[in-house]
Image (tube, rainbow, N blue to C red; front, side, top):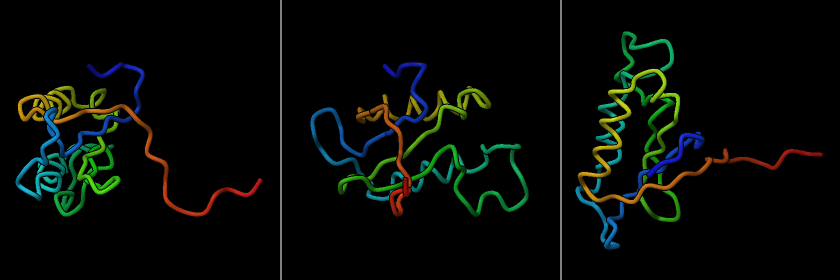
Length: 107
């Protein structure tokens, strides 16, 4: 279960049994399907880039899709689709906050 206070949810390409999910490009495919759901709604050419609300990435060698809570607020059916994809495929889901790459801020 995902708590409503989580800002980001990570769908990990590993099943609850610890097996790597296939096909190997599942994260890119899922994010591609979700590319139309973005701040301000779908736009011409939006299918050519991922939505900031559903981004494929690799974390510690594991393919993941980072899903932002704003997707649920803006497009509840799209959120349900992504969460049901994870559930139907027995994928691990974790709440987290993605920290941007780069140099640490100077204090």
